[in-house]
Image (cartoon, rainbow over all chains, first blue to last red; front, side, top):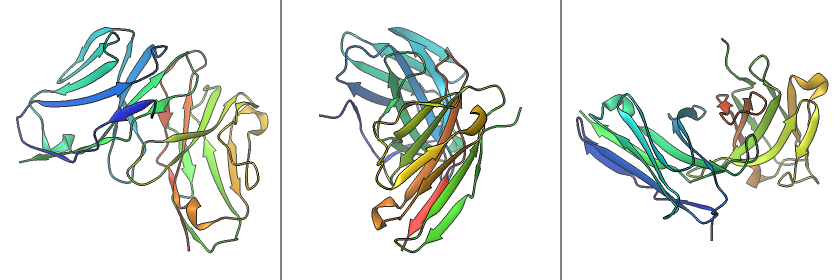
Length: 111
Length: 113
């Protein structure tokens, strides 16, 4: 069993839709949870970073962590064509230690 | 602030040839990571440096891969000899000490023919 599971998609939505991206994990020791966005032929770009359980909001993006269910989500409101990318979740036990990445979900927002 | 710089961006080599990748992290970032990303997969850690010390190289295939980070700044990742299965994107990332946010470079896309 992989440490982190992520549905690869692809996911296609109309512009303006609310997008929900999810990851599950098996290691209860994970404390730090991140979402990265990766455009084609680019390196991953950090979007959201949360510690432990709870919600965090940044503009159109909301990250949720449910440690009891070992489940994290990223919501994108009012999705835009520029949001079309692959979204990677990542998790870590200790600060600066090894990240465990999901496989990424490919998202296309159709104008 | 300049981001993580990597070169070359693309490299095509024949199998059994050597290849090297270079990374310049964000200024002041003491932690440096090399990842390999296969198509349709997330990045997988190869090696992590704290300053010039390799503190986690458990996933580095040491028979053919080597890395160095002289003076705790720039880093080089080498493959010798390359195999067909090494075709992937090699990503470098850096982070400030004791903070978790990793900043990635654009990657080097390696094709082994």
